[in-house]
Length: 391
Figure 1 (cartoon, rainbow, N blue to C red):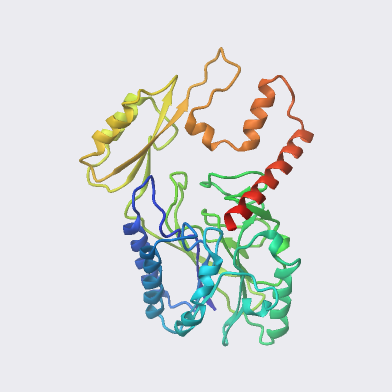
Figure 2 (cartoon, rainbow, N blue to C red; figure 1 turned 90 degrees about the vertical axis):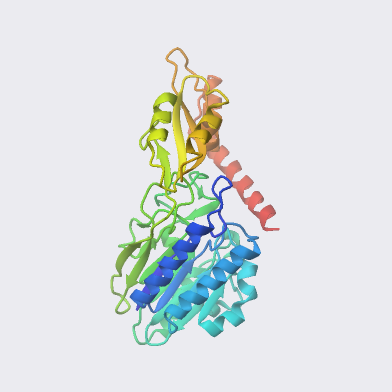
């Protein structure tokens, strides 16, 4: 069985108010061409189709038209789409019946009373266990293993078994994600790999944007990563994963196929930060004909003057590049024992780091007991916030 594994399209995402439809359309066109060339048996989209749970009509049209073209590129291919934490699971369910006419399975919610709905049999090829994102408390205990056991009963021909999940797995590299803590990434609590059961040949993960195998999985559990970057900190290659399995028990053979972004995200300077005059010099030297997004990393002693942004905008006005923001990084003053954050730095700090800084500034020790208490409070606040957003 041959599987195209992709996730985290985030259709409808804007970057500092710039519309990204052109880039997203380019990405979808490349996927259509890959399907035509590779002829996979399964096209697996593991969550975060959209960037928000209420995408506009034009963004939904972008997705549906792309999915039809992807189907037409290889009509016998099975397409499996699951909801991620950015998606509305209910919206995924609305059109599940008409989608089946195009061999598309759209799964938005956990079916506790009908778990076999999550099992998709690909005749003479293998099994897909499709699990969408949901709050941990809404997943029955042992649900992943229950599904794997049901497939084991049915799999008399020793066919490959693929399971998908949109979640955070402990120990993953979450470089590029802004909201992280010891327990969550992007608002999703971490699972241990063992929590996701045993018996799959490949675990197709979504949510983390950095493509990677999960340590300890023997290259059976993998994040395919996002096909185009969502933030400037995603400074790694973006791709889809092509997975091949001959039979149950085999090790998956995985290839990555790069996705080209017509509007790359560029940080000046490329490494670290520089003083304003040097950054402006490099911005002026940036080629006029490259349609990139630009972030400036500027090292400051105090603060940049308010006209700095207007100066940067004036320089890029006649360039194809789009200026986005100035990211200031403060020089440390030797005479000061206390750290002073810029607004940009403060926004990137984890809550626990801010709490530790505050406690230490008071002359107290932020010991393990205080850390444990703070983490419990933070987890409760995150859970309550997610429940409110879901309502």
